[in-house]
Image (cartoon, rainbow, N blue to C red; front, side, top):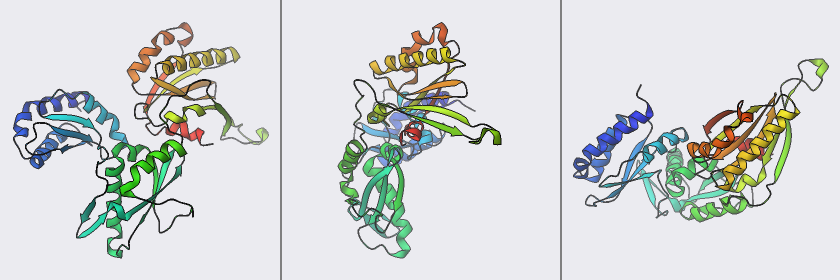
Length: 346
């Protein structure tokens, strides 16, 4: 199978070669032909265009339709885009500039002003409760729910809806009598205020001494060591000061530095190395240490970074030291910081 890098290169080469012919088409036809070309090389992505038939340059949006699993591929495609004469390439479907709009489906029409939203907390994400501001005929209940999802994607934008929003529930009335209901057409500033003020996600890197919280977790086994297998315990330290930058789009990768700690001396070496790595990343705001876990003779530190290669370059002098010889490095895409909030919510 063709590698993603080769497929991306082949797609952009073919798109650039046919750009002039595509530009001569009406916009709707151009979008269709461009997606046929994209599907020839890559799966799970689509192209949308914003502009008019006669515009010299139109915005071309690469979307994954909210599928987080495809976001890394989407980012690769956009990063590899060549300079095009008639298309400005962007990642993700952005928030609409006109959030008050209707959509129709099979003869049924619904407006964003008729969709009411209440925000609450869902672990580290924002949960949305949805109810309708007018009576929806029984035959169109499913239509209305599907339309509401489409509307929210357009109003909040693809990335925010996929990453920052957790549970979405349709209700007749909220379980919280104090819930504040906002028409979807007015939601963006309300959602942003909830994100920054209620959840504390200002986007600003912390300054000064960080605040940490600790917990001991038990996995399997029995509390009574005489009754069977002893419990496997882990000590987790969570950086509470990392919360303001949680889920920033430029801190979407979890970089893990994992070291064996067979005795107290090795534990101290690992802790020192992990702390020094945190300093190197945070000074240049390339990343932040989110939490550490000591379990089964190993200590791992998890940092959220935006660019894996830049982060590793910054850490290179540290990782070349003799004491880092046994260190193992892994990276995973975790834009919702699920690893962090598994512990930070406690």
